[in-house]
Length: 283
Image 1 (spheres, rainbow, N blue to C red):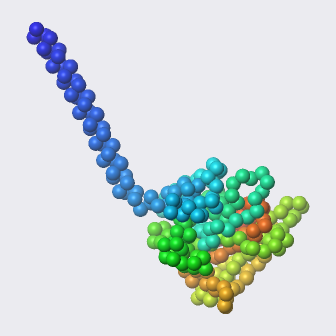
Image 2 (image 1 turned 120 degrees about the vertical axis):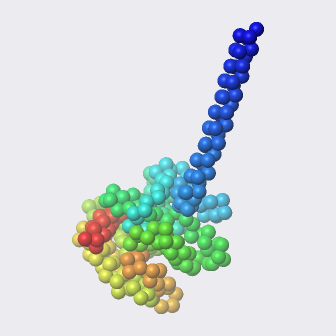
Image 3 (image 1 turned 90 degrees about the horizontal axis):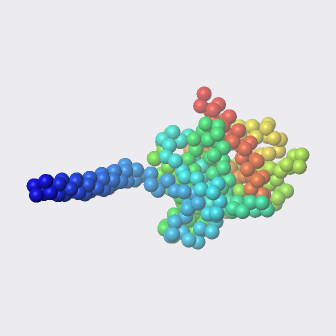
């Protein structure tokens, strides 16, 4: 009888130990999850999967980004050594769709490709995936205030990533196909244009940077760059946030009639040029 009670007590103790161990594991996991969320909270907004750029509050713009393409589902990583900031003041701009490409050929997709290519040259670029439309809506601003919205992102980004030195606002033009396209040996490229806001205090420095990039582009492929255009006066922005930094450029790659494949070819060359310029500038 004593042996029976002893055996029964051992079984009870084992069960109690298993239950206690189970609760300890649950408590430990909850603790780790809570602390991870606390330490990483300032990065949560920036670690979106790119195919989900727009949240539920921005349903109207969700159609501009295709969720069906795995190539576009790239998670932005936190990196304290970013040197370049890539963004799009006009995020809804898009190109002509290639027959063999299913995804939406947006300016943001082209900019993401630029980020990836810069990475291949050892240059860390931060890509802006937050919604300009959300900022406009929340502040009750119209589309013409898009540069005010992207200014908000610029100021926020430099606080969080102070190592960033170069800022590129990527756009596409609205010109005719002939004016925005260069074809060499039956291979076509989207021409590149640099825009300088003449109503900002940095315009001389912005121009010098654009001039070097313009020359490097045309040295690699004559006619790829359409040159540099300065804008000021009534009906134009005239600043384009270039007063934010002497290393901030507005770059237009191709036009609305260009195919995304033509844009990618130009970005391949633009990446070489930017990489060379940045490395020379930091010697």
